[in-house]
Length: 67
Image (tube, rainbow, N blue to C red; front, side, top):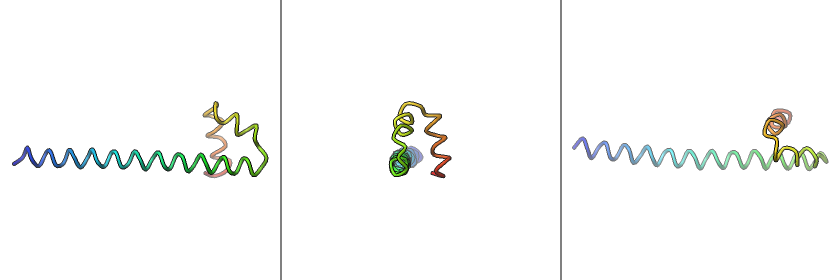
């Protein structure tokens, strides 16, 4: 009985982790897309390009735009 319950719990944990990972990826994509929209609206194409290779700069832009 304990083995079956342990298996159910492990399966539920795995499912929860997968769901959390998918949710985290979606949030990251949404956040990045919002930054792209704002930078383009502000005519900051050079900063957009730089943010694709410089993650510290990208983080600075997220803070600047309160994203």
